[in-house]
Image (tube, rainbow, N blue to C red; front, side):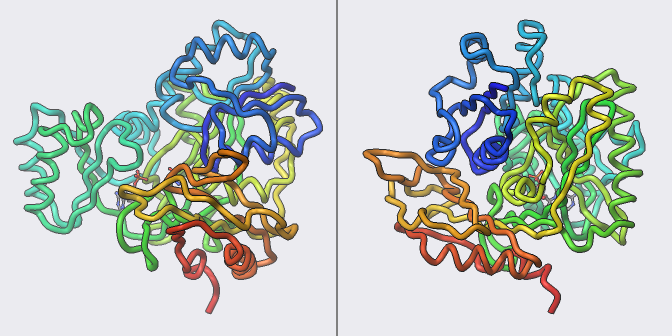
Length: 426
Ligand code: AMP
Ligand code: GLY
């Protein structure tokens, strides 16, 4: 199989790493990739926004499987553009219609309402409904959850305690175009209080395989304080997601979601990422994403024993896909993100990174914002590395990551010291 993988983050390095273990893999290309992915395949300088150039590459290199990492390429409709041109190409990315589950929060809410999938109550307001939106805000209690309807690079959710601040934020989003067209419509949501977890499903729109659970540590500061980031660390599995709770997730959320896709005639080959929250022992959906998570992928994939290339190659064959079992390791995995000075605000780049060689078998260092220049690996993004480790418990996996990090250095390196701590029995 010849595979083209789109993206450049830690998630894509983890996907490339997993694919590279498959005997079915012939050639792997990553566009644009990073300094880590280049050791597993060939990085190529394709403009991922220009679907026609991706098409030309697919033709030239006889690509069999295309895997899309980031949501923006999916939401812009890569599946709909390429599938009619390459009917034999397997595309691990859902159709444009399906991508609205992530690309439009209102679409996702209406879908959940229609298929009775548990989620927070909400109301949605367009630009010309600012007055109604303010009145609605006045009628509810804090905390106030405001969400831009469209994609806003992970920044479109704002939670405020104070009503005046919420009104100000609402005006900035709806009237002053804070998130551009993404906040032309704003959702005001009921605040849910509980513990969050991420669940990933690989589906062909008919059947599904449930991947290991993960927890994402989103804030920059220890104890979940400070600004939101793309994710500063992750662990898998999430201990409170026991068998009984997973059964609830499957029955109340996964099955109705797949059923809904079928009823709506929505094509879906790829991953569904369920951002969930446990409220009084009941799972509720905070958000749908139409791709894998970053940094969750860096802890989920190291725990999967099955061959992903094999699974992807069968995804369009209803019968063959159904027969496949997803084998999951009993080991735990933890990842800690090393970020650049200043992240998630303005950050420095171009720092030389040392200490990347010679890892123990339990460590896997995934590159995120890195590039190779004059034979040196330098920082090239906010999130630079994800240091993943396996272990027989979350405690051990996490300790393995922190031990490995000690040998890595670049100027201004920052990481949270409390990844996984809340999940370790005292
Ligand atoms: P997102 O950017 O969509 O991943 O959302 C960011 C974060 O906002 C989520 O991970 C939750 O921590 C929080 N959040 C979103 N919606 C709600 C809600 N209805 N109640 C409480 N927290 C929420
Ligand atoms: N880790 C959250 C995300 O990938 O959106």
